[in-house]
Length: 157
Image (tube, rainbow, N blue to C red):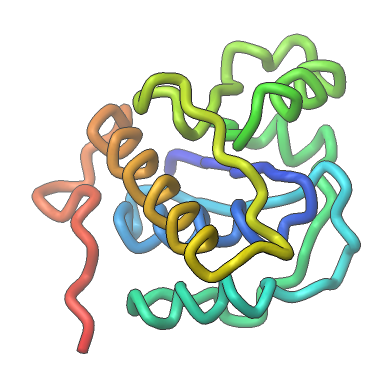
């Protein structure tokens, strides 16, 4: 099974949203999890992020913020970060794994996805849309075959 780790700073907004989106798109074809470089361990998903996930038929049951560590990085086939500075920090933790580390927005013009915490709902919506588009672009390039369901969002009511 392909293992994907998504990293941001606090593991309460961007990386949990990306985790939920990729899990829904990839189904059982990958093991997706998230962590933060400066996470307050145990924090839940930021309320606005949780609201947007729910509105889009997605969710993370019992999400608890985690601090990224060397073991998580070593166990991952693909490590996706939101910003270049996060890539640099990850590379400092695990230099030999640098080739596994990429921006989530790599296939969208190397776009960085900024932290929406403390900003407006509109900013959260733009961030969600950027994460969704970036996740879709990664799905198109995933080195695994999960059949015709690959990266198709499930229908929700």
